[in-house]
Length: 200
Image (cartoon, rainbow, N blue to C red; front, side):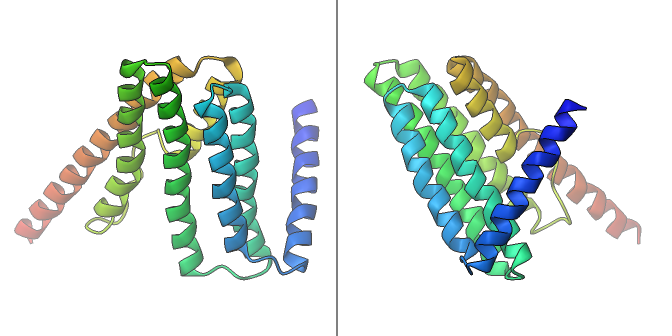
């Protein structure tokens, strides 16, 4: 019951903010750009080991990431370019935040964790790439359970709880497992499609 009240209250506030921004004719792409600028702030905090502060800044960046789509919908300014732009900027945000962590562990001379962040980096980039490349050949490839929202939530939890190293291990393993899963799924779908074509 209490969570429902919080949810309705949050939606009420979000709707009012969205309608205000739409009435002011704020370009949704500008909100997207502001979000990536805030990601630099989060990376700066992470780079100096301020994990809790960095996590809070990520939440702020996430608000802009959420607002841009809603403002575009309310103002009826949804465009194919806007969706493309938002997706590309999201990849920049991911990269910027992870680089902040990489800088922190490099400054602490913890080479193992620098490599670990690099492995997380690979998983984060290839998760979206694998899906985009797969969907140029098959209808859809949404398999796996470590996409951007999950990564962001885990980074926030790691920062707030002071368990960033544990979170990085989870991201490294599950992120790259998602990529492998998508590779296998695409192979299976193409193999089945080839079999159907032969049968026909």
